[in-house]
Length: 154
Image (cartoon, rainbow, N blue to C red):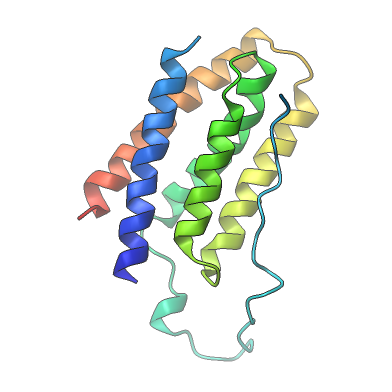
């Protein structure tokens, strides 16, 4: 468990670096990240919760990061930055760090994919609004990732 927290926090730091690098920079992205819903056994509905089933305290921040990474993966490509694949790769690494059977894995993949598709539906060309979203999300991902690393890192 502690190793997974350290890996997650380390990857959150990498997400922050990706966001900072992308902000400094002026192919088709891959929206679908695999969840693990089919291979993980589901507990019985009336089964008592075990400590491993409790989400980590930083899960809300990770969900927000996942949403923003999905949007950035799409919008950075749409707006010509050419680094959308980096956001996809970092999100895939974050999912891998969560572990195959982690309950939060499906939530993270779902948040990423939903955000990617929502922006794909609403933005067909790069607009000033899309640029504003990119700028805001780059700042916010860097801030959240740094907060997670500072608070929960070892």
